[in-house]
Image (cartoon, rainbow, N blue to C red):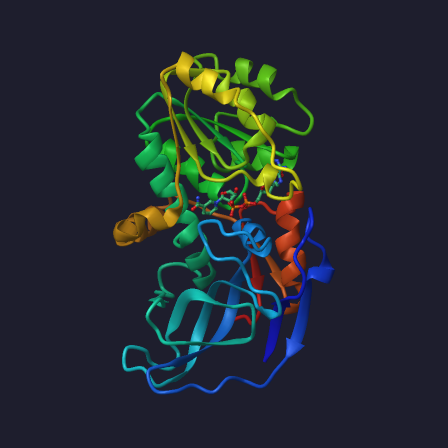
Amino acid sequence: NREFLLVSRPHGIPTDENFKLEINSRPVINDGEVLVETNYLSVDPYMRGRMSGVKTYTAPYELNKVLTGGVVGKIIESKNESFQVDDIVEGHLNWADYSVSNGKTLRKVDPDLAPISSALGVVGMTGLTAYFGLLDIGKPKEGETVVVSGAAGAVGTIVGQIAKIYGCRVVGIAGSNEKNKYLEDELGFEATINYKTENVKEALKEKCPDGVDIYFDNVGGDISDAVMSLLNFHARIAVCGIISEYNNIKPSTGPRIQRYLLNRSALMKAYIVRDYHERFDEGYEQLGEWVKEGKLTYRENIINGLENAPQAFLGLFHGKNIGKQLVCVRSE
Ligand code: NDP
């Protein structure tokens, strides 16, 4: 059983040296437990915070312990009557070939709905994050302008499409022309901005002639400053993530945003997807329906091999992915 451990805490951008692959024996299960063989592993920006050893909304990863994250896999042994061998499940498990679970936090995945990898993306935590943040905080109405940062990533691509389902005009901000072409040509975003080559504020003025009603923020920092200066009255801002700051050694400061909020009597609310756990079933059902109806499409950036999991994770901070970044540990 190959397992990835965190062996040192990153200072700034993580490096390969922070991770170590160990080979241990395959775990043995006790009564009430199941053995899950990993098919796909999710790598997520929030893991950077857990690697720091600082308490955020999740406990930090412990040094010299196996890393954990979202996994989709197959039950290959079961001593738990709720699960049968060959069931496909999703849960928070190890960065490893095999994980043991007591089943309490495992969710059965319907392999007929969509490829099972999507249980980590569009019909998984990623989709729920987009769904609840946009609908509960953003409260989109037909004809409104929605700006999404990190627009070509896992959450951003779903947010933009849900905003379109609600009849909004969607403007995406992402880090390459290839990404922006995908957003406009395949997902129907009305306009896009490449923050690496354009002046974001000037481009936004041009592409949001009626101002910004909803800002779905995945990145924070300068991009958010630019968007916030163009808010409409009673605008809503869903703070989902601030990836531009996750590798900062010194936290940035910036009381300037309060001025923008006050000038426009705007609402800014941060959230974590777990806040909505009592409504997860509603989210899964609606996202699944939209996928079936073809209203939600999705892309996955899949890297093969457990040994490449750290590279897949690091790629998030260099914008290597379009859509959801996954690692295929063993194909179905
Ligand atoms: P993504 O698939 O969006 O991957 C990260 C993307 O961020 C990269 O592809 C890159 O795209 C962009 N990026 C990286 N560094 C920077 C930077 N310095 N400035 C601007 N953009 C940058 O990841 P997710 O969709 O999984 O997550 C998106 C955000 O949502 C993250 O901030 C994450 O922490 C947050 N999140 C929050 C949750 C919650 O419960 N609140 C749950 C899940 C995610 P580009 O080429 O455009 O730079």
